[in-house]
Amino acid sequence: MFVCICCTLSAQQSGKTFVHIEHADYQVYDEAYGKGVERLIGNVALRQDSTFFYSDSAHFNEKTRYFDGYGNVHIKVNDTTDIFSDKCKYSGDIKFAELFDNVILKDDSTVLKTNYLTYDREAHLATYPKRGTITRNDKKLVSRKGYYRDDIEVAYFRKDVVVTTPKCRMLTDTLEYRIKEEKIFFYGPTTIYYEDYVLVGNYGWYDAANDIAYLDRRATLSNQGYSITADTMFYDRKTEFAQAKSNVFIHDTVNKAILEGNYGEMWKNIGKTFVTDSARMRYYADKDTLFQHSDTLFFYINPQTNKAERILSYYNVRFYRRDIQGKCDSLNYLISDSTAKMRGNPMIWAENSQLRGDSINIVMANRAIDSVLLYPNGFIIQKDTIEGFNQIKGKTMTAYFKDNELDHVYDDGNAETVYWLREEDGSMIGINVSQSTAMDIEIEKNQIVRIKYFKKTTETLYPKEKIKEGAELLKGFEWREELRPTGPEDIYRKEVKVEENAGKTRRKGRRK
Image 1 (cartoon, rainbow, N blue to C red):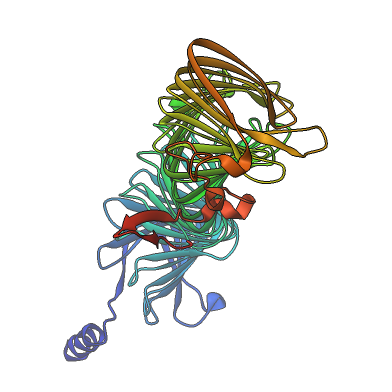
Image 2: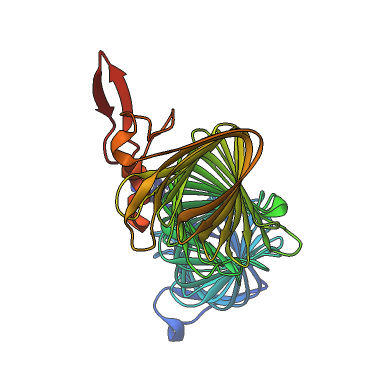
């Protein structure tokens, strides 16, 4: 008794506990199986601490606390965790089990299947070094290597990881599955396949309960004709909402549009895309690419047809196309009817013409400018071929274009003109100054050739040398060539504001 008590105390102090035989139909001692080994046959039940080990037969060494179990092996770890296999090896000294063939670990509604598994009772850690599968309700996870902690219900997967759910399929290299939270974390290159979208990234998580994904370190969400790429991507599958942050690049190949910025959002269900923070758009559906920059930009498509319908731009809008350039504070481009509305100190340039008004409406036809409505306070300036400026001013003006050049202008309300009249050889005739209630002005080769006046009219032709100083410029004249975008990259340039102070001109602003 003294020896047994000492051995028991020694085992408890070292953290080792005995393995007890709870039941066996037969118990045979045979040196052929090894010194000190017992052969247990039929309905074998062993126990260490609160863990039970069941098998058809076993070879058991009580002294070393080691046994091999054969046939219908079942380890009952606790009330929720059970492990099954065809064969097992167990060391009671270190509380470590090896399980072979048809291995199944069940923990609540989580099931792990593999052909070889190790289980560390002290660490509550199950490990499979070869291919294994974990299923949890309607989710299935497969990998070449895996680890499972039954105490905290967390699984780790390595190499060729495949996750399948009713909503998506995921491929990755390293994954952590927090079962209670229904949350999956990715620690390597990852691809998530939805029915109609693919999400690719290098690090992030997936909330299986809410069908939400987050990926960063450069992520892309794409379908057959649309893609969003950014340093960080958040995607809510239920609401079809995507949020992109930092170095955002959106490409709509169906509508031939590219949107860029540092922050973007997409609502697929309503066909709305939003970009801000250095927003830029390249719209190449027309014969020439339109480059546009603004603080904020919205791009709308019809969710049923996927056809582009409208582009909205707000604050510091600047755009460039080879045949037309412009600036304003807000721009509403209705693609469906080829019209653009410019508000907030708008101004456009076409060839050598500058057009300005409190509001500007542009109508496109055959992918070229058809007409421009300037109201109120419309002002058109054309640089003369040699010197000076031809000018048209009025309350409401409609300018008609042909081959992207001014063809004629209808000026209604307080109409005024100044134009430099020349012979065919370019020699000066004089400067014509006229006022009328309304005018219809014909233009050829960027020169006013004919004016039709309506109602009250005054018209004077001045020799150049006799015209009063300043009379060759209409009130409100401003030739702002320095504001004109000169190329695709020049759309980022900030406007230089001119202020008058005590008779001196101050320029404010800087390049972005």
